[in-house]
Figure (tube, rainbow, N blue to C red):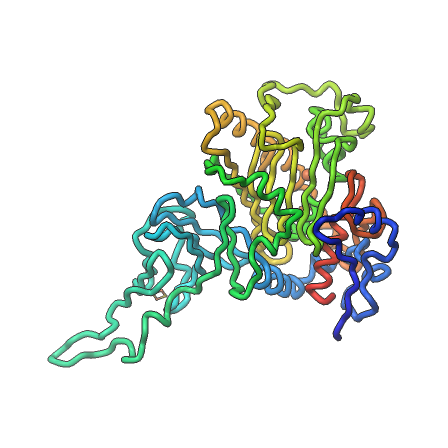
Length: 444
Ligand code: FES
Ligand code: FE2
């Protein structure tokens, strides 16, 4: 059934948009259509649990969001500084390899041998002159072109040639599946969709400004990785970072040590499709934390054994905000929390699980003290982090709730039922925006 969709789109410069959106009660409503899901008032303020539990919807999401029309995160150029360096990663559920060729160019190709389909690359990182598939030793260049096929011309026996590939077999037609690659500020994105709009158009100028703030051309320095497998739907991770309601409530640590509070000066900004967002917060208001939070988890007496975790040194490139969390839909979260900077890569594994890969980095011009500081502050994040361990657990338990009652729905009505940028954090508008986009693309 063809649908019409009348979600209000904000323009990239925003202006009065947030006010207008709040005044416009019908800002996010799909016109009457047949969806297999039950959306309250045909909007996105109540999210059917089925979007997290339905395996068929998940397959459609992979096709619609990860395998076409979207630039997906691959990694940082600093992970493969030299010719022949490579990294194995994933786009959605498809394994891919990023490699640097002899011309210094970054290539991304699918980790599926052109012969009989084996995932030929097993190491996560390494350096190669070429890629050789172990099964029958077909070999590929660093660009993903097929260069060698054993016994291509057959074997000479008793004066005649036996076997070999057909005479019309061409190596040029049998390379690896190459993705289109975009790099900006040292970050690598790729897409299977060769007709994609540019990366810059995909992100949109509002969110691109926050991307460029963190990736401003300085060479990046890799500090390390965290990996976790979270038993929940991949969209919950996007939602978690589009949800400024929870940090001051779930993460006691944040509140106690003043890193994130509901009264921080803050803004939420989206691209014109509502798929990407930046959550921008500036620490430093004077009220005592417990006056604002009034949350049961707040513990005034909690003390750090090592105060260096909070040895925060403002940096010029922050240009004000002390924390900016950027969600690029569907595949990555870009994190700045004071001096800790990282990318967080979402790699789905079926509808009920995803891998979450954190790359902690710094900048080449960091002093050794700043590198140490970034590493210490990275203890906030990752599977065992003081903050992010909480997120993994609530995502797992949310998925459990959905599975036990798939006909029910989640409520995302904080701040109203509309979608628009705001200058405060007490809203779930970014989640409503993400599902407005999801509904449009999924036709659901
Ligand atoms: Fe790769 Fe045969 S499957 S060489
Ligand atoms: Fe969180």
